[in-house]
Image (tube, rainbow, N blue to C red; front, side, top):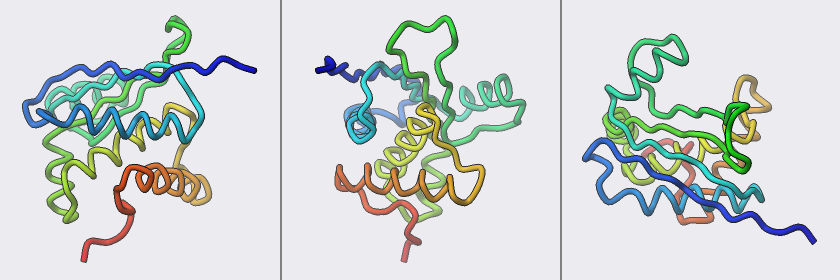
Length: 153
């Protein structure tokens, strides 16, 4: 029987908007790891728009912040390292407000979304998007968060 690899989240703080959110985000990531049957370590940067805009420009060649960035591990990474996820606080606050969602739930959705990207999920075509969204819905439901793709009413 294979030995189970534990799951760990290394959190790097940045914006004060993330204060008190660390535990909920680690819980969402842990639920995603459990659902996908993976162990290892993820590095989570709780950044602000300025920091994420810099990463977005450097690594994707795009101006401005985005809500979440995922960086799979490089060839020189330690065994068991699954990758880096970076979240932009102000962008996520704006999106949550405009979509009528709680900040905590929207951030949990985005960290799960970013984690699935680390595992190779993508949404470049409709079939892949549907598969990824189904995984997100199931993972979020397992921690009591409603379907993030429902329109706010």
